[in-house]
Image (tube, rainbow, N blue to C red; front, top):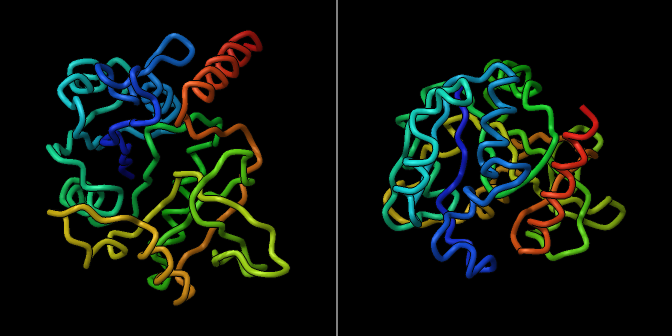
Length: 235
C-alpha cells in the first residue's frame, strides 16, 4: 500500500519561519515535522511514499533524499506552482498505483495509528461503492474547515442538527477512482469532491480521539514540540 504526504503548501501563517524553510521541514522533537510521519509510517509497515512539493521543494528533496534514513522509499511529485489538495493528488495518481492509498497532510502532528489504514484499504478494495475513508477529530479551539459528522452507519456527512460536529484531520484512505475526473494540471480544492461523495453516501469515516494538531501557526508549532518532548520522556 502506498502513501502520499502533502507538502506543497506555502505556510503563509507561519511566516517568517517559512520564508526560507518549507513548513514540513520545521523541527518537532528534534526532527522535521514530515519526518515524524515517515518514522511512524515505516513502523506501521509502509515503504513506498510519494511526497508532493511546490514552495522550496528542492529543500524538501535535499533534506529527505530517497527516504532510506527512515526506512522508506520516497518518490517526489514536483508541482512548481501549488495545485491545492485535489489537484496535487490527481497529479500524483500515476505514482500511486491502482489500489487504495493513504494520504496524510504534511503539516499535522498526531499519534494516529497509521497501521489501521492497511485494513481500511483492504475493505475498500472489495467495496466499489466506497471512494474514501476520512479520519475525523473533535473540533479544536481554532478555526478549521467545514464541519462534518459521522452517521450511525459510519458514513460521513456535512454537519447537521442533532449530530456532533467534527473536522477532517488531514488523514484519509482514498480509492484512485475518487480522483479519476479531477484535473491534475490546475489547482483544485478537495471540499467540493467531498461534498459530492457524501451526497452519494460513498465516504466512510472514523472518529479519532488521540493527539492531533494542525501545525498552522507558531503557537501550534510550539504545542507540537511540547507534546513530542513529552512523548519522548515517556519512552
